[in-house]
Image (cartoon, rainbow, N blue to C red; front, top):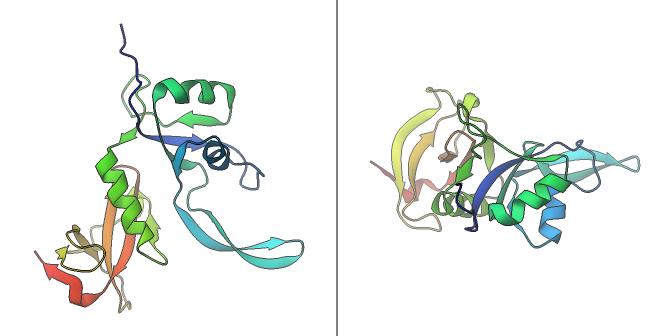
Length: 179
């Protein structure tokens, strides 16, 4: 007999609505009081014939939702365009992210004015620089790889959510300690 999932945790979900939908799933969930994180980027869009800078999801169908299965399952059942992302080679086991990993990722993103998001397949071995630890500043204690980009004078720390998403956040050189 399966155990009841009444414990809140971060689920990786999909929103299958069109890009221009008026009410994407993340907005509906936020309005109903559910904690949601959607990686956002700035993009120029045309609204009423004028170009406007607007924040849009980095990946249209990706959202992270913190709630219990007991509360989420009925929402998913009645919202045909909202789905769990399933782990590969399992029978309907939803992808989850630990609280600590998610909180660390969200905090790092919030400390950067313009984080650079990467899909797992976009990160090449050539991008990984040396292992670093941040000493001081708002990201004090964070560890990871330094992203190297040709021609860039900025230093970027790579923060990852395993098998889902990665982000590069800019760090000042004086806070970098090579490990």
